[in-house]
View: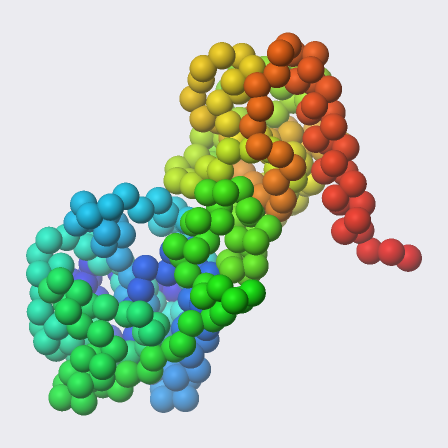
Length: 310
């Protein structure tokens, strides 16, 4: 997959393309439906499959509201690469881009720069100055400009329209198992192991402390999987401030069950599978250690239930 940083980086000699447009944060099952349509159209029509995405998020760039991203930019690119897309254009979303008229976007960006012959978007797609353009306007401009438009309806699961906003709300509540249904995979936190205060080791449950750029860190204790270089270990992960030991920063700490791999300085991905409990303040370290032992037992029971029978 080729990644272009900015529209100007796309060569004018590029092949005509089928283009999907969106933030694609989390690459949930609704996004995947759009990308499946994109790949299918590109294959049928001999076009290049290309995604136009934005960084930072438009809402954040314009200062309208704070949006915490489900994935880091690196994670988003890795997921798009895994989806089989040929090229991605990461466009800085700034005031100049936001002020572009609908026609300028259709003609200057889609037709001239990206050489779009087909454009794929979701039902709620908006574009142009003050988000004036919708899918009907895009179709009209496509007819005038020379590209077709495919609008992909949303995916509905359990009566809920799948969206990045819905995923964020579930993660904020610690409902990582429900968020996983919308994502089509567990929520992941990636980072590098850094030195901690050795509190877990002193309690008998050594942990790897993660320095992460992930923006959504739902507090609580979770059954998890810890992944390094393709190897996966069952684990228990705590996200919180360690209130039993006084005020402190938010930390992500994972305790690997059974094995004791050397993780110092390692780059890890932690997958949150199910929340065991919310964070708590304990009266003393003995009470905390007893609760952690119970958390570990609950995680083992979870994995035992998942083990294939026979």
